[in-house]
Length: 486
Image (cartoon, rainbow, N blue to C red; front, side, top):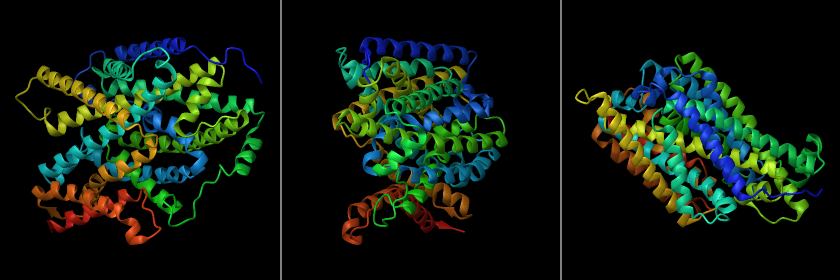
């Protein structure tokens, strides 16, 4: 099938990006009216559970899922769905173990739990590990999407990568600067809609181009081996039990112990509605991730039919922007931008909240006026934007294509101590020597790194994967037990 004007002009695509940003600014202006610090941090606890649930899909998926998950299908088939099944199990732990705790204590920052349970050192250590984790994870996601925009649109317009990065971060600052969580709940909902629209349009368009129905598409994917879900090689990093159990713990750590994700959940007025949000969101996430994998299989079938050799993270943008009609390219770009903003706007807002509340303690400081608190918050917000920019530049220098595997490795090292701290606090009644908590949380990841680099020597063919998070949490738990008493 031949198309007229298959490629859309980069300038036209860029104009649509700007129009989309104007829409986000309009939403931000409307939702931030009359906002204060409580609005920024927890949305005045007035967020509707359904909006939070829908918007969290966009935050969780981000550009990594949008670009990387379809690209992994050739080598890993549908193995990623094993992790997704683990995610689903983990959301129930978050909904029925962690959320009741946060609501009972009426927390603004979830790390205040560590203060009451252990003391100031454990509390600030937990908050700092979140800040490190979220900064690395969010900037990796941000870099991935900015790089795609750069390669397929802005390079052709002669705009350098560094300028692109600065412009996008300024855009994010403009619509999150005042409204915080209240604004993000609405903008993330809008962005999730456009991301899913791009996904569905691309799936149906490629199926139509290949002359496939749903059943014939599944048969071709089966024949190609792409649709294999379960890996039964116990030594492999992608062995199904490792992936499912690891996925559950990733959800517990990266959602339940993450201020960004929980900040939106505890902005819902009641615990019941927040739990309803979590279960609804987790159910939809299973289907959406499966659809991304299905799209990945279709993309490889499409590439084979057109004689394309592109693979991995470059596959989806190459097909969408160079081999599909202009209207589909526009929808893809809007979907890509929608994948970019939720992962960055929520992260900057959550990091600002955590640093202000947990490290600086501005809400507890009675000497500060509301105006001084707001000025401090804005300064921190700007500072994190600059930090994000520097990390994006750093990842550009690294130029590593395997973003999704890097993200999971980062999570294993940085969320492990958080997992150990919260698990020890919830599962035991022992008191720890609070001043030694930071040492335990630093030593555990170091031991994990030593273990991972010597896995081949110790276990031969066995490869450690996302179970690193569990090992890290267990070592932290053991270290806390060693410095504790009844």
